[in-house]
Length: 393
Ligand code: LCS
Image (tube, rainbow, N blue to C red; front, side, top):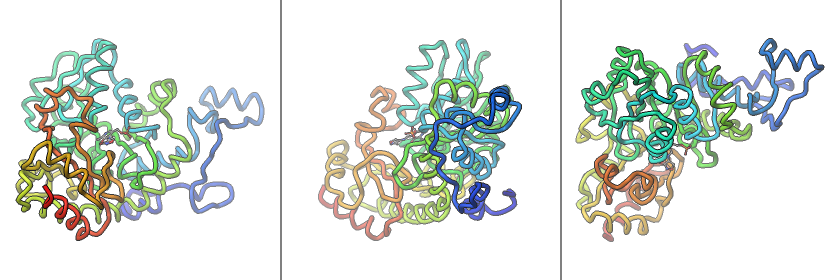
């Protein structure tokens, strides 16, 4: 579908389900591990890449392909690859770009498992990583070395909601002929457009807003056709983190309502953030939509709205944080984010427990930090729930 239509229209109309043989409105779930060849010559041509068509689901599947076309269209990229999880997308990209002897510059605040993958796994394979506070672009410039191949960032970051200037990082990256990789999970393709801001590759945990319903784990990579075609036949095919056809279907369904869900989530989040900022039991609220956020101007520049994630510090520290988890009634105590339900969690003991304490504290993930992922419930009900829970502290 043409990119001239607005994002909202493309979320509804850009999938290719109508091309199936019986005219089903929705993309069918091609729940098949393998595909039948007419004869030996056809099989040989497909393996040689001389004829389009399916071979085996680890090498591609029509439900997966529809999702990939839809995601490339929505994110303004040439191509996309759907994967088994956000971590499969991230590891596939990193292993596609870097090899032994190469160097990566990465943000110091990243989702816990991404941090663990970059600090503990790829270093075992001879790849060097420097973590820097990317809120200051001078740190990025200083970290670039002769053997640097890529810059990896996540903005807003999980869970501190600090931002990275995507355009600024991409300029540094271009000066040194590097690849810029941006994890756009918190914003979704609706609210932030890293490729337009100069990034080369965008990755998502599609488990989050793209699915939106808390019912699947998946990932997406968006970027240049040539590179993605290579990775599809190397890191993705041979490591094997491919998406299941049913999960691809769920993401296609989730995408249809992405814009309306995100609009409601952003509206609710702003109301909740303002409520928390005024509450006597709350020390500080980290939400890019608040003027008090140190990077509010950057948020207005590179984000279309401020998203549903926020973190807040309670005056009572760790104990108050733990108590709040047990006194909320409507907010659900669970990790993950971007769902229709409001989820609350404690990063120090949950999502960011893999990060060593010293590094965790340096990155601003304090022991008493609470993370909220706002859903589409009534903002009044969410505020009433948080109020009753806070007043018990
Ligand atoms: N990137 C970000 C920013 C994430 O928040 C997550 C997961 C991932 C990548 C990995 O995606 P997955 O493999 O789980 O699809 N974040 C989680 C979180 O904050 N709570 O639970 C998972």
